[in-house]
Image (cartoon, rainbow, N blue to C red; front, side):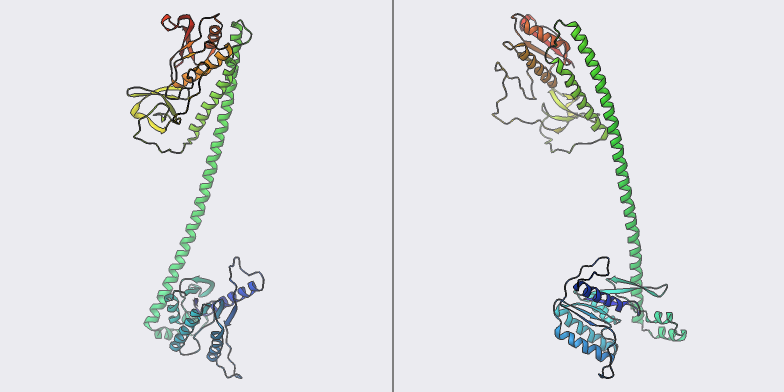
Length: 464
């Protein structure tokens, strides 16, 4: 139930007619004259609007209203729409208001959807006190004394009869006398309603300003995000161009190094593994450049849940102090850690290491891959072997195994390695030495001391 109040000529009756016409148009399949409408299907639309007095039928205005309402009461039920204009008018105000409340209670219990207009203060109070009812007011501009035809839901309206009479030109002495005769309670209630409507107008104005400010801030946020995205794309484009330039320079230097090496060696074909170093270095450069891109764009990885009580272990990922980078622990000393961050090998204090990821743990009882002679060459991240035996391998097989062995030892932070190749005809030793001469991880190499195999083995020292 909605109880609509407000001044005369403020649009209360027009509001009732607009609701009724919209419902009938919708149920007839016609477009509703509204920007948006959500309407249920009603069984009946019952209306008591206007003056139905008749001398011939011996009906006064009040009698005509009561007769129409009596017929409505007999048929009204759930799913009906009732439109009642100026209920309880055309009679003594006290009795009219009491009768109107009793009628509304009957319609409320019937389950019908009811719209009623009124000037009675008691009906306004009924709309405020009844759970199924809602007050609404037709807005009235106090400055121009003209209606705005806006329906304000949630507040009762004031009639403003004296003000309307003044706007229509009623003599001033009559208006003055009327204001004197208005009771204190009526005047206070009227002033309260006026204050409430003024406060509502102020709140609506503030809300409109807040919405405008919110729209402005959202537009600014989108503008900033777009600008930041454009800057990121420009940086990426610049970094990509620099990467390609660096790769071209590296390829040029590598080609020159290969040409020089071919000129010094006897065989026209370089040892297997050397030809792959250009691609390996190129990939390594790309990985380093990707790390730089991440640093430039400050893109941090999601935080992982790390057990802070567990001690640091070889293979753990730690954040390097004073660097926007992470590295892998390759060796643990008394109070220091050796960390490999890209191509950098760093030593940091153990208490400065912030663990960001734990090493992956191989399931128990899972055998590790074995080399040709049964030696374990797939050591886990916590330990890499410091020697490899390639006796019995062909030259090509030995080069492949030793190349992989050097990569793993370099990653694990080994400094000194022993490669056991035996004596024989010296074929394995010669091919391996040719590879060591151009290997990017090898600092120097020399025959092993007599206690470590002599000429049957070679000691290799890796770059720091």
